[in-house]
Length: 286
Ligand code: AMP
Ligand code: FE
Ligand code: FE
Ligand code: ZN
Image (cartoon, rainbow, N blue to C red; front, side, top):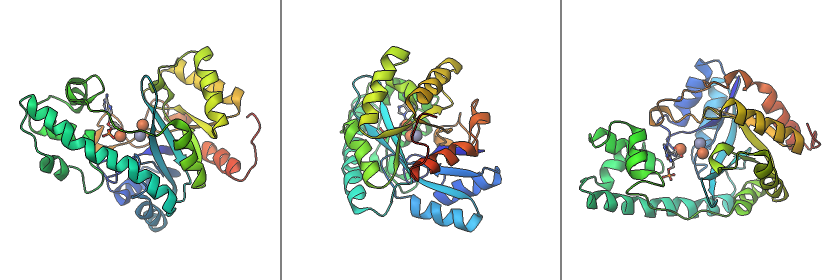
């Protein structure tokens, strides 16, 4: 079994890359991909831990992209995490997130919640600070009853303290991944708000022209009918099928590493097909 969507303290997960690899090994997984939001900072440590513990680790990233409704995330697999060009382009997104945090805190202060950026930073584990850490601070301060409530009331895009941030257009996010040698895969398509065959197919075809090669069909929040739609579209269009739990440790307590309703479909075959594609094999409809 494999898990191709995980986060560490380099973004908004609660385990360090080494702890994540150790847990994956203990769970008996055959491979994991570390796919932190808008950063490759955890990858060197994760690869070293993979060597040390004898676990295959795929260096990945998850990049937020512009999308009119809902949200769009593009996963990159086997990105060259030492690429200066990639680092430069990710730094723009990191700065956007960094600039937004004090503005969210100011909104919360205006709503009568006396949270400080320092308190939030303390909860981040040393990597990037983002909304999940603010959610944790709200929870630990007793202002909300769960992390989900923090998003529902304050931090989500309908929340009272929501502040938007810069995102690259999809083509730019895909190009960043491709130019760093990676495979670009559309993450958790259910967040796009395009759940019919007729609306999703042309959308995917446009992304394929931009260089998309895969679709994350297996994801804890996908219903069986969504999963069936995504799998059939992936097969029809010749997109790789991927999947993962989107593990964030304690920052997303309802999800566990390698464990989700779709876990039986998360087999090493997915990775084998991705590797074939990397080597230029199997590019025609699978
Ligand atoms: P940020 O990078 O600061 O914009 O935070 C984005 C992260 O917050 C996502 O990757 C999720 O982990 C989490 N998140 C965003 N929206 C929600 C939501 N509505 N409910 C729960 N978690 C969310
Ligand atoms: Fe996240
Ligand atoms: Fe995501
Ligand atoms: Zn994710």
